[in-house]
Amino acid sequence: MHQDIAEILFTEDDLARRVGEIGAAITNDYAKVADEGIVLVSVLRGAAIFMADLARAIELPLEMDYMAISSYGNGAKSSGVVRILKDLSSEIEGRHVIVAEDILDSGLTLKYLLKNLSSRGPASIEVATLLRKQTPAQAKIDCKYIGFECPDEFIVGYGLDFAERYRNLPYIGVLKPEIY
Figure 1 (spheres, helix red, strand yellow):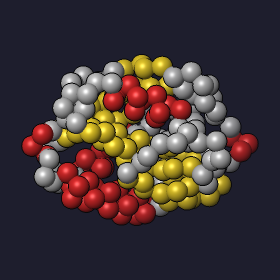
Figure 2 (cartoon, one colour; figure 1 turned 120 degrees about the vertical axis):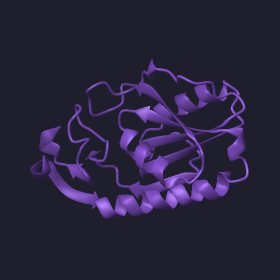
Figure 3 (cartoon, one colour; figure 1 turned 180 degrees about the horizontal axis):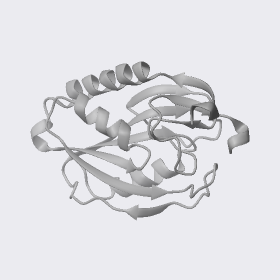
């Protein structure tokens, strides 16, 4: 797998440091409302690794839940059609929701998700995205917590995949174009 990577953008140490910083910021921001209930929502599958590390970095009681949403299929570009493949298992009404997203690319999927979750009456909803791509046509989404800005390249690792491969790389790197 490593030979398919053109360049490493964020090392394992970079990721651990930044996720720790985001976790500390969330701990600080939610310390006074933690009793109302914090729900950390991961968008499967890509954000699962990020959310697991983020949850361990947050020093407050929280619940973890998962959704599966797709707009890609097995392709390299968004299909433009968003589908919920797995919904939340718990109620979020009156609770503080933090969406742990792996990457904000076009923003189509996240915009749909935020509208969907907002309709369920949470006390608040914020986004913690590990990566925000620098793309010109990106939907306007307010992300309170951003791990890294990244170039508009096809990236994999630390949960990010191409056709379900490369998720287990401990770093984030640019996939060689000939691979996709």
